[in-house]
Length: 295
Image (cartoon, rainbow, N blue to C red; front, side, top):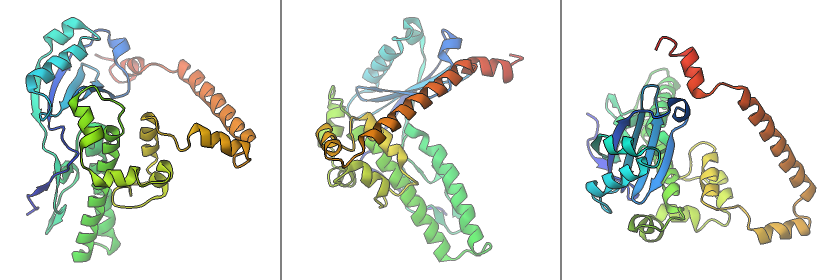
């Protein structure tokens, strides 16, 4: 039997969600190829355009708001694009259970993806853990041509545990580095919550970016960790402040000409990409002409 106990996480306080399936108002404009996330006062909203409808929902914390107030806030958010659609939307409640099993592999049963652990919908960690857990299991079984002893099992358990812990830290970055302060929820996340591992990553790092890239621990061991750079940058963090950057350029520690060349190359590349994108069909046009021709 697989271990039944779930080990919770301090940062997983978004324990509720209300979701809805809403119709398109302007399908050609609203159907795009990305999942949008918008932060609200007590959590965040996902927006996923499908061919026949839009899937959307509000993931929030019941510790800071009620279901009724969350629904009111969600309808207000939906009304920004269409008031009638927001008023007519039918919601269903989802109780979110966070955590991970003590051990993913017990005897002859292996928990893969969501059967092993769940953080929250943000960043689609459920899809990623399913994919990576399956590949890791395959690699483990092939190491000794199918021979499985305690070493293989515990090695797998340690590896998948480190994977999900690193994802926990990545997701936590979205919240703890937020600049929002418009509700008790965001103030708690950015000023009050106790999460020592995250503060070790941020406060004790002489250079935030460098530690994310080169540091290794169970909380930042995932792959190249390049994604953390984008989250940090989006929260206003930079590897160097303006004063130190200017100092390094002035004293020759940084090659100003090389920086300018890199910047110009980036601008040129960006223009080329945008020029190419302009000639491509929209997501709606591509799906209409290549996937849903008969619909």
